[in-house]
Amino acid sequence: MVLAGGEGRRLGPLTTDRAKPAVPFGGRYRIIDIVLSNFVNSGMHRIKVLTQYKSASLEEHIARAWRLSPMLDSFIETIPAQQRTGKSWFRGSADAVFQCQHVITDESPDHVCIFGGDHVYKMDVRQMLAQHLDTEAEATVAAIPVPREEAKQFGVIECAPDGRIIAFHEKVANPPPMPGNPRMSLASMGNYIFRTKPLLDTLDADAQLESSAHDFGRDIIPSMVANGRKVHVYDFQTNVVPGEEDGYPYWRDIGTVDAYWSAQMDLVNIQPAFNLYNTRWPIRTGMSHDPPAKFVFREAERMGVATESLVSLGCIISGGRIHRSVLSSRVRVNSFSEIEESVLFEDVIIGRRVKIRKAIIDKDVEIPAGTQIGYNLEEDKKRWFVSEGGVVVIPKRSKI
Image (cartoon, rainbow, N blue to C red; front, top):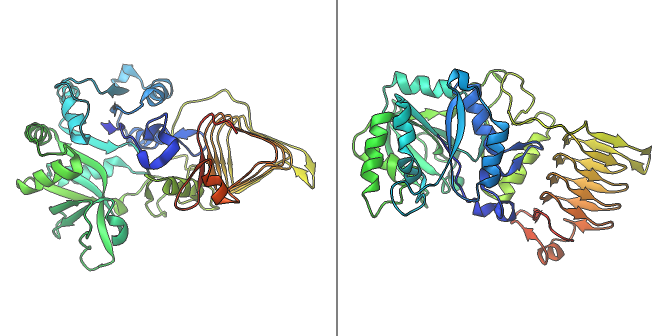
């Protein structure tokens, strides 16, 4: 099960009209494609995606891009909030699964993987499942070390030497350090594997508690630990993805505009930390009929060129210069324009002599000739959202 109902408020204008997992990423993908690719690449082909907040574009994307073979009992299906257990919508991540537990009982699995749908990482889930089975755990929580000052944003784990979790702290002001490393804490990635019966029993008990936030990190995992359930941690750093045996495991929470922008910039590095070009572990998505990207004009001052950038199908770079940027499909950049360290969504048109630096421009926006964005943040703040890190965000279909 993939939890994909997040509102994503900290992503500002990017989630005004769409759920966070539906936000474009890497030129041609959606954020949800990353976790779905991890499951499918791991040989897990029976997946339910729980949706809620502004889910239309997310549900359309999954329906059109993710069609698995029913001949092999494979499926990826969305489940919108339906008020099956009362008059409330999903009150938290655990309540979402509780309200949809009929899909678990219908399939009668021995184990259930419950992953978040809004992080950037690669994981061979089979390796986490193997440890879950070897330790005979009732629940296994994937975790990664993070600096203590950043750990305040995550659930933090304390565990025994054998990996059994002895305490779980959700977003506390003073997170406990890792043994032997006082500068780091062990943070939950929001990815869990449960044995089915202990999961359903704990969800049933949690649903009766008025004081509960009905959240996996705040309630379900701490409750299982407190009740003596066998809950283990899985060290994500030990996960080895085929084709990336020499790489360091990459995981990024892209909950803010600055984190989202930084993750996109990671893609354009000469040796990207998140490698889209590993054919043994592809990030999958739907196909398009857009033509190849096109670069035109070769005059010194009017040359269509892109350096350290991702340029998607259907783009036309007509005498403009692109550097360290990510362009989605059908972007048009006209002559004498300069785009640097920016992310452009689908169907953006850049007029002549435009200069853009460190910006995210949502789909269907036309930037008039001579416009400058990202060069005077005080002026930009009068019209657009500007993050703490100085990233300018122009909303979808904005009129400039």
